[in-house]
Image 1: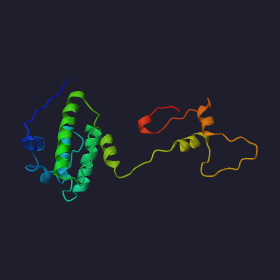
Image 2: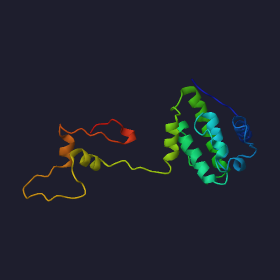
Image 3: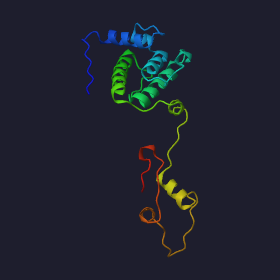
Image 4: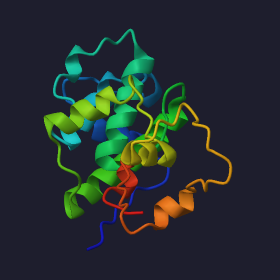
Length: 187
């Protein structure tokens, strides 16, 4: 199925202003760069497009536009697939972001998208405050084999050290990574 939209040149910005105004009737929008700069309207737009993403957008503080734009950007990334940093951008950046959000919302409506659960929203909004590093392969190997990787033990002369390739190719060792991109991959 193909979704096609045509807007005459010169009327694109007015069309987007009207579209945002229709989706978020609680906020008055007349100029994109000025009215969307606080990020509250963008969060309201994302709530209208993907219900459940930002239900209390009206409680966001308008005096913290960078934080609100960061929240809107993360929600659009996780639930619509729009990857663009809009913090600190002007009206041109917001205009381009809105075009991409509109297209992604149409695509989500037709093809579906990731489920919106309170846990997924909490994970999205909480991920910008706490970044967790995925453990390295050597850390996972050390935990799996019970090796203390911080202290090197002296090997007696003539003894053979176990190399990484020996560990990886042994038939007794199966290691599952915790990288979200490779969940369930075995090495």
